[in-house]
Image (cartoon, rainbow, N blue to C red; front, top):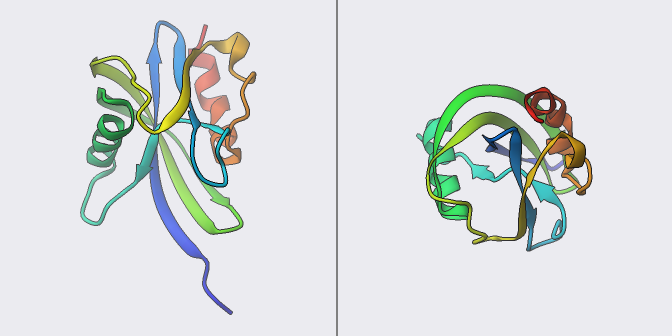
Length: 132
């Protein structure tokens, strides 16, 4: 039996003024699905370093990585993913859509108005109490 590919991912819940930044994936089989920006942790990289790098690459922003909000293991058809979601604050810049088709600041009232990745949905309840 072939072993399923395993990936380690970090994602950032960027909070500002009681809202969290969500982004819509623009590519691949999951295009049109919303997520928290982030990506794979490279060999030898800390979670914080990976998240700072990914936020710069994907959104063109510098972030301060604060606390770990939660961890989720999720099985997709193609791979098994371990994702760690961190609370982040903008240190410099405004989010730019470099790899996403849409981005939005979401408050408590519209948090569920977009189709989130299943793995992200598992962690949204950790963010919701911090939103207005």
